[in-house]
Image (cartoon, rainbow, N blue to C red):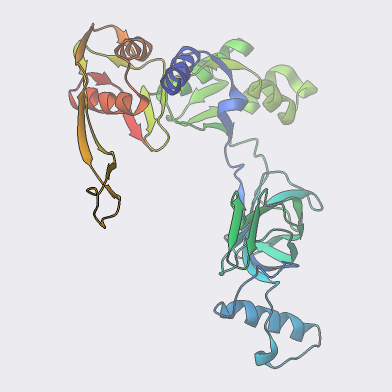
Amino acid sequence: MKLKAALVILFCVVMSYAQQEVRIKDVASVTGLQDVQLFGYGLVVGLGGTGDRNQTVFTEQTITNMLKNMGIELPERHIRVRNVAAVMVTGHLTPFRRQGTRIDVTVSSIGDASSLEGGTLIMTPLQGPDGQIYASAQGALATGGYDVRNRGISHIKRNHVLVGRIPDGAIIQNEVAFNTINEKELSLSLHSPDFTSAVSMARSINEQYGIDGIASPVDAATVSLDFAHIEELVGDQLNIIEFLSTVENMTFEASSTARVVINERTGTIVAGGNVRIAEIAVTHGGVKVEVVNIPEVVQPYPLTLGRTEVVPDPAIMVDEADAEMVVLDGTTTVSDLAQALNSLGVTPRDVIAILQAIKEAGALHGQLVIL
């Protein structure tokens, strides 16, 4: 069943990944409108004894500084708080986020706390790469799991409880100044650079307006837009926002590099529909060696003081599968290969090994990416 599931995933991706019409907004964005990564250092309080221990010195220092700012001074030796954990708070500030709007943040432990479950993040400033404060985060964490310990005797854990999220937990305090659209330097950037896709996108935009020169490819990732040219044709009836809205909803034929992606840890194989395999013969066989221990009970001789003993009796079992061969012609796709390997009855991990061997033989016309 696992093999069939893996091959079904591979086949479905192959069939759906063929060159098709896609919207511009799904594969490209306006150049210069980039996200800003935010980060900050803070404290999570309200933990049920699962916070940082005494070895985490910076947690105690942070608590001391925070209380001092509130007018409370305590000797350092009196600070033994197990309900507090030092954390790093991260988030992404997307373009056009205005002051007062909210974004999600992720809270991660940086000390030796055992769990952040049930904790509350106290107000934490979030800064960008330039050191400027753009947002402040605060609120209750959602870890999506639990970690229950009973005096070291029993331990029940579900999911990872040292990282949590706060939906809409940060409020934007300052807007990013460069989130503006310049009519003179307007262009689109492909998320996956490709010369064929850039040319196809520019051609599609020009055909939609019926005028050459509105869009022109600059490189594999950039398509320049001449808004001034279209503005002269339609006059004041179209502004730049309406122009971009019309452009981003246009469709074009996107192209991609032939690629097979493999995750050996999970046995997942994903391949593009444009991957081709040259004429090649594939054979599969395996040797399974298993050591089996069958205990044997030995009885003592009659009228003796001996005891019944259980003696281990190890046995080695060797199972060698019959090798079969499948010949693939030069027009084979990955879906054809999946069906051929299915006929051999191989496992997903064997499929990965076979694909690597095909790549080494120079018969796989595409990139092989191993995660």
